[in-house]
Amino acid sequence: MDAKTLITRAQYQSGKSNYAGAAKILRAALKAALKEEAPNNSLYIECLTSIADTQRMTGNYRTAAENYAKAAAAATEASIEDAALDARLGGALSRRALGHWQDALNDITQIKARYEELGDHAGAAFSTWALAGTLRVKGDINGSIEAFNAAEGIFNALNDTSGTGYCQCGLGGAYRMKGLYDESLQCYTNAGNIFSSNKDRFGTAYSHCGIGNALRMKGSYSDGLRHLNTALNMYGKIGDTVSSAYTLWSIGMLKLMVSDVISGEGFFEAAAARFKKTLDVRGSIYADLGICQARYLHRHLGQYKRPLQRAVKNAGVYSLQLEGCHALKLHSIMETGTAECYKTIGIRELQGNSIPLNIP
Image (cartoon, rainbow, N blue to C red):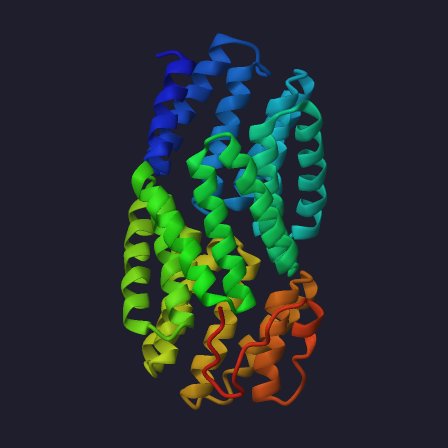
């Protein structure tokens, strides 16, 4: 079977969120592309970029970054600029997940500007969405909201409902970080309706997780758990390690809020193992913030300090302001200190001065 036919079949599987199946087909397509033409042909580049896409979507960030770099180099050598930009953007998103958000932010900003120069509206929309997510990682929540709204405007003009749905999810997360839980819930609900209509399994799982977290922050623990369990089940079927890890963390946080400390710690430990596997720096910090709270509540007072100290250190090493604020807030409660950094990034400080602290 020729490479183009295999790529079409793989795209169909990716559209169904069957990333493992898509990757298998794409590996066959890659071999076919190499037989059909020279190494730097467009089919080879498309296969390599698509393989990296499946790796990024399932949390294999380091390998994804390597394959995106190979695809970008091949596209540059072949003077296929749009393919080079697409691969560079995927690489930036992978590096962001590995903790290198500053490098990613610089690259995404350059890529976005070039898409706009070329009049590539789809590329401009996707890169603006990527910029918004990276600003959220930076801790610039207001800037993130502005960028998500801008991206949504472009996706709407393109009649790209999927893009609109992912922007709504991005806004839901940003509003949750600001403490605007009703707005967060509405955005995730909007996204869920879009994804359900589009039969987008990954997007539907994403929206369930977001709805569950918004409900958790509003104190609706039973309904929140129902949505989080739905998301966890869907992510498991998709094979998305990193998204399932964040969902496990969310369930752990909810368990702490209903005083099920032992169960909560188990969910945090399970999330931590997956974050470690995928090299997700931010996720590992959140896992540590959960574990230290569970141990503190369970009166393992000599064991909570190490994960807390590790979270504070890693947030500083990777310049993660929002996660650093959460870590310092917990430190201020457990060890005495200050959490005034919330003011510097313009968001509402987490309420309460006792453990458990409901981290959004």
